[in-house]
Length: 121
Image (tube, rainbow, N blue to C red):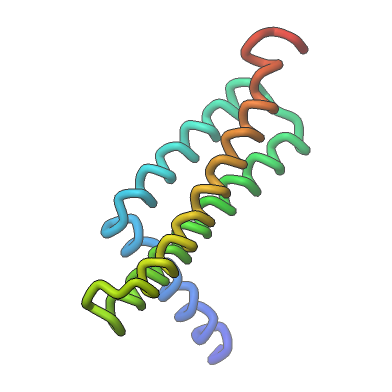
């Protein structure tokens, strides 16, 4: 029973982290709304399991990238509250990773949804 309580505590902490990110991070909220819209399209177009899996994976990559980016930014702000050129570069790298994951996700979404939208299937 103690192991289950320990596991449930970890889940509770993780859920608190997601809630805090949703509350504090505008970009994370925007990305969650976009993910919800994509999920609605997935249901509307009745995508097959492979297409659904690929889209879910890409959405998770974007959301996870944003969480890691936010984590890096908050940590750097804590240890170096003043503007520092190296801190800026690290933050820029992190933001670039989010941008790449988002652009890749959009490209994958276009490739998957285009046949459904234009009736090519």
